[in-house]
Length: 83
Image (cartoon, rainbow, N blue to C red; front, top):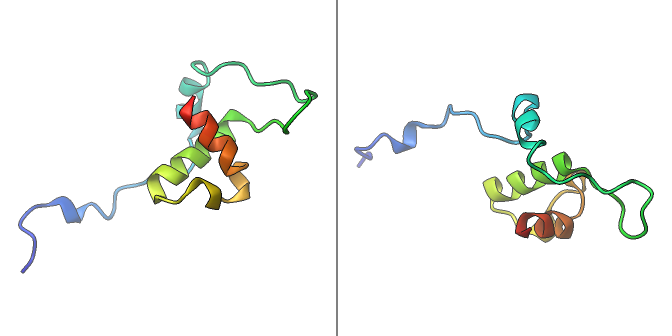
């Protein structure tokens, strides 16, 4: 029996996989300054890359440890998400 509501007809709606330039210009002003590149410790991963990873995990439902390396490490994305 088909569903009577229209909730299943949203297949054509766009999903966010990467942050657009317009959205990034709004969000970047609210984020703290980036860590300098030549600091001791883990390599610097830009906020935009990490935010794309966070959105990917939340939309797809994957675990942080299985996050693709194109977004940086899963632990970095998880830590910044918790902050």
